[in-house]
Every structure is written in C-alpha cells, then in structure tokens.
Amino acid sequence: MTWNAFHNRGEILRTVIATADERLDGKLPTDVAGVREQFSNELDLIAALMLKWHARLSGNVERELMKQPLDLEAAVARAWRTTCDELPGVRAIIDAYLAEPSGPEMAIALHNAQEREWVRLAAAAGLANDESEAAARAGARVEETARTLHPAPVEAAAEVGAHQPSFVERLKAVLAA
Image (cartoon, rainbow, N blue to C red; front, side, top):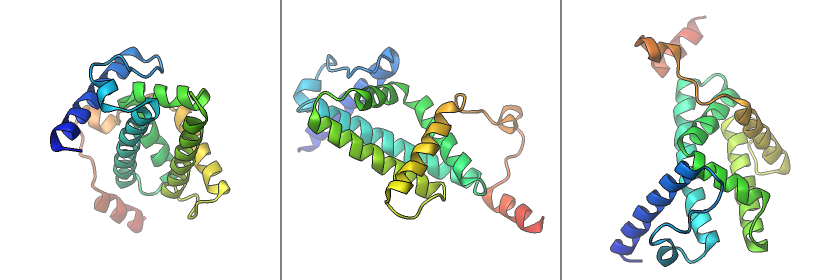
C-alpha cells in the first residue's frame, strides 16, 4: 500500500467513524465516499473499525489504571465505558455484527476478536494471567459491568478545578496509611 493509499484509507475511516457516531444505528456506513475503493468488503471495514476500538480502549485502560491503580477491575470497566462514550457508533456496529454477523467468516473473526478483548480486559483488571476460557469469562464480566455504568463519569475534582494528585502522590498516601 502506498503512502497516499494509506492516508486516503485513514481519512475515509475517520469519515466512517464520524458517520457511524452520527447515525448510531449499528449499520456499516458503506455509503461513505471511498469506502468501496479502500475496503475490500464488510469484514475489511469492520476489522479496521475494531482496530480503532481496541487502540482507543487500550489507551483508556492505561489512563484509568494510572488514575486508579488499586481498584483494577473498576478502572478497566470505566475505561471500557469511556471508550463506548468516545466511539458510540463503532461500538453499535461491533455489537450489531456480533449479534448478527453477515456470514460465517465474519462470525468467526468477530468471535475471536471478542474473546481476545475479554482476555485482555481480564488481564488488565488483574483477574487472569492466561488466555483460558476462564479468563475470557472474567473479561466478559468486566464488560458486562462496564455496560451498566452511566456514561463516563466526570470527576468532581475536575469539575471544580481541584488539584488531582499524581500517581506517585496517591501511592505515597496508600503506603503511609
């Protein structure tokens, strides 16, 4: 893939994400200009959307774990919820296609991607250290918890402009207690 093709694909994907976030209908926006030229089929487009989802989720998990290193499970659930709030259209598409994949190849790909996400959620939450079915079940429970959370909470301290203690300051406070 040339640099121009890569750049064009990225621009089109950003437009697809914005369109999905506007529509929130769980349908792939294949009517966006350039989609058919840059993405070979629905699975190719969903794979690109899932890559965006996973990248954003990973960053949000890292940020939440830095803010709350003592309650890993709650931090990971909040990160998942935050990612939903940031990419609502993408999540709606993923959920819709997980529920009703458009073919057996997509069903297998989405199932495998979901299992890997659950394993990563469980590991980040400190609930598993392997890639077993039990780890996937633990990660699924973290996702289930995240789905029950209200939209990403705005911390009261941030609302009033209060000083947010750093990770080191919080760690020192915990050790001193």
